[in-house]
Length: 132
Image (cartoon, rainbow, N blue to C red; front, side, top):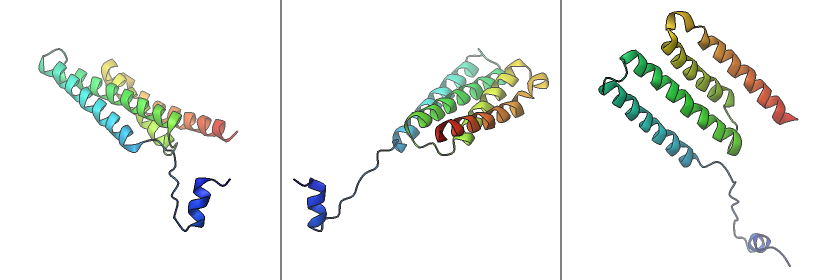
């Protein structure tokens, strides 16, 4: 017995196969929702005088780095693995920028280029592990 798809192709009906892919809308919605929560929390801390403007900026960068890292992880696990180097490097850059601001940017600024290098090396490792 032939499959339903084979019968439809014989009748001249065009069969479109949908690829199973990571839902773009879900990914964007998750990122936007988390970003809005982050902005709200950071502005609340600043408006209530719990954090100075410098700490507010640092917490914003740390939160943005964490959101980007979660987004990168979700793409790596379930979706297309395109632009992983850029995503990973961006996440590490934001995290190190927030840490450098909290720790004193004058002495911790080298964390930023170090994090970019670590992101490039991690991408190389992840890509080589996938090819095997």
